[in-house]
Image 1 (tube, rainbow, N blue to C red):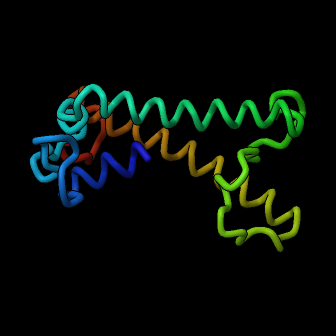
Image 2 (image 1 turned 180 degrees about the vertical axis):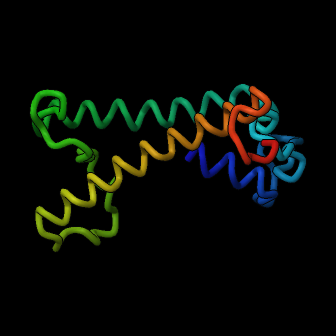
Length: 135
């Protein structure tokens, strides 16, 4: 989400309406760190709390419904009911297909973290990322 958010703001995409009272989405700067600085403190807190609640509930459900991935459980398996596949699109998939999907999702997350690290480096240290336009 961080990489896509940084990229979309940099590309000039904006949602309609207000981010907060008196702060339109259209008025957010197009550079990633400047855009983050423009978000009010409570907005940042809401994003972090939401992500934290998802993580907390996943850990809670792992302890009640299965083996934690650090103790031999399945890596990438989300235990929160309805969060991963609310439409039930994967209910008829084989265990091998589900395993491949979880592995792909973990790899996608790792690449997104590398992407955000690259964008952050390019925004804070001039010339640190070759061929990268200013972000």
